[in-house]
Length: 399
Ligand code: PGA
Ligand code: ZN
Image 1 (cartoon, helix red, strand yellow):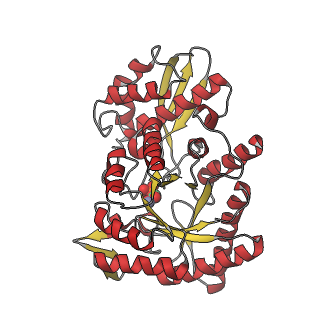
Image 2 (spheres, rainbow, N blue to C red):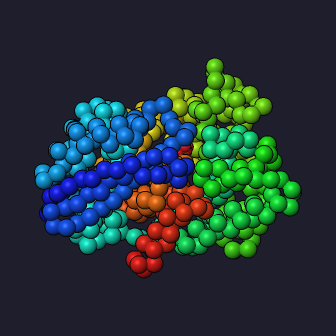
């Protein structure tokens, strides 16, 4: 095993044009890894803390880098991540910033893989299992915090559940995205794009359901396998004074449960993320009780990749799946812990990008390494295709 020689930190740009933290990790034997932190817009209240970039870099240089350089083995991810936690000293990385922590954690993992001469997913303990690839959930229409004057629901996600291979799934999502572009053009609806490259048309949620359903059916017929769709309602963002305010539609908790259960039935939804507020464990449980055998009820802002919050959810059967975002919790090891707890309790895992992304493709390897059934990482645009194309390469090289 080889020790980390140097950690170098710098500010670079993310996909929104905001500054983010990039880390380089060099090992004593010449191994190298580089990674940058993504950033959310509809962030959960309980996420680890993202500090202003310059502050995060300065704090990590002062507290974390001296503990890593020349001391910690690059190949020992747990030791790297424990060191980051000890250097920070808080529960939520508010001292060095989760943005610095996750960039260093991922860069060290890549350096560890480089030293071994192995693909990152193998270094992270996984193998590519052929037919058991992570199904990409692709944001094709959206609004909420990711676009202006678009749908109230944050994301409509293409879900190619019947795809025979990862590349078929990736290409199908891109085709659904293209088909929706054509449908919008036919309707004369001008459509901008949101942060993740999804269409952001000025239509009601009801209209968006019709458009997405038509596109998914058309592409499904064309490619010859089943494509469903799902939603991220990001409901915590619109929960005000005990009510859910989706555009002009205002619903009580009971009405929201009724509404979402109705959507699952009507559209045979494959996936429903954050249908309720980030503190609404009981309401989540009620919805899961009703439709959890038909669809995935996934906690993003609810669980924030945090094992304590996930355990609370498991205790009351709040959901049946969890979104995994390494930067929500700060390190890869913490993300692994959340995945392990979820899997042990029969929860499905969905490894996910953020709305502000970088060219980094670590989450593709994390999804393969942990045998995650799903990955949510957009459909088009370079920072999204970086992950999707990496999945295609992993499959191609492994088979
Ligand atoms: P975010 O959105 O990255 O802006 O938080 C993605 C999501 O809510 O899943
Ligand atoms: Zn979400």
